[in-house]
Image (cartoon, rainbow, N blue to C red):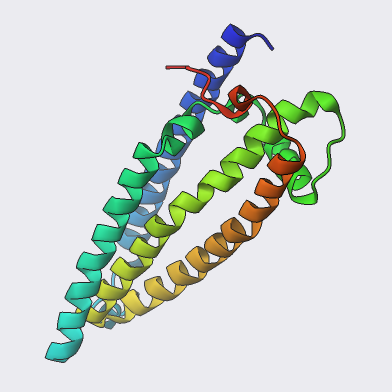
Length: 203
């Protein structure tokens, strides 16, 4: 794929992903609204009823909520300043299918190269897997913020949300931290032109 065609494909796939994301959020919101209207009073109001946390617990919750927000902001700023956001936004991986991306990630994890033609894409995938570590502070900030909100309200619904999000974030962080060293090892084993993992310059 030539450079101009690749850039056009990256822009097209990125726009499709954004539309899919927006559509998913809108559909989820609509379904939630319809379920809420149909259910009426089927769900107990005590689920969202605010508890009465002791002063010390409430203060701790407020501190954790602010700390979580700060961690998120610092993580996002670091992500942008490091160039990771731009590199991922303009990654040539946007030009391949989701199935192909999974194949590339699995190949990087195993440290195998089935074809020399795959190397540019494998190096790009490996570099992206390494950059994902910069999302750990953002994930930690979200968990800390949720914990702070839980302590501030002590509502049963917040216990449920905190439990679900904590498990999801823990699994995501574990996978990122597991894959990053493998990706670094792959890049050391298969060094190449630094331009391979550089942004394509698409707009």
